[in-house]
Image 1: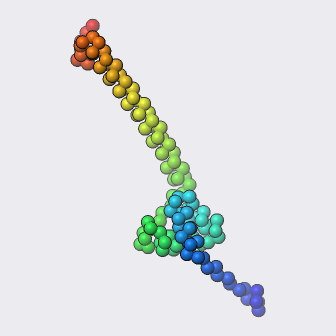
Image 2: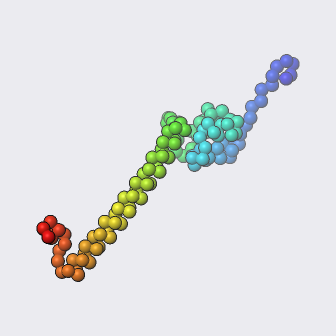
Image 3: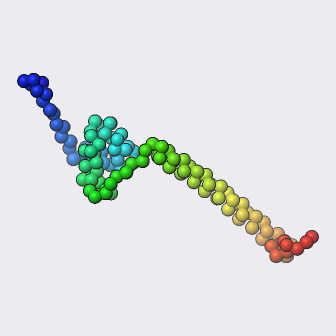
Length: 121
């Protein structure tokens, strides 16, 4: 304090630092909130840097970040999708295997099992 007044200090950040922050945001490592807390920079300033230095975001676009619950839901959906894709892949392998067995049986018995499968035994 000087003469009873608080001296305000302003920090200046280099362009490299600003670009690094924007790259960290664009890579998905951190949200704007996390970057602000980590580097002790206001979110508004970080958004300004994103608009200025980002390749993806322009000044007229609005950045919407998902809350943790939405992020968790998205991750859960991605896990579920991967599980379903795995199951579909296994079923396709099973279908291919059974088709091959039918083809081999057709050659061995010299008949068409698919055509004769509806007839009574």
